[in-house]
Image (cartoon, rainbow, N blue to C red):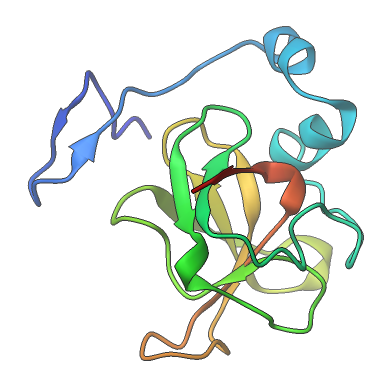
Length: 146
């Protein structure tokens, strides 16, 4: 699925960062047990427990695994679900989606385009003109405050 190479522009002029590939052992050393469970094993934190579900601080949300910019705090809203929710990714191509039919449900999984970290899911019930709600695990994010 390699869509990335050395840092360069894609056909739309977006900066494309190189892929981050690590062994399972390397990911386990880098991440906390909760982060590893969420981003490498496609886990989900309990609602209303993550560090960012109710955060209103300005800044950039980055991938906990590779540091890639994922979401801007300006696009964060209170969805009432207990997870950080965003109306859109920070830039085109920073995340990608895949069908997720686990647990007898049909959902759309959101992944970091750079390192394939599981971030959460996207739903078509969000506010704004795009109508999307990116429901993201706090354990998958680091907030770089402005």
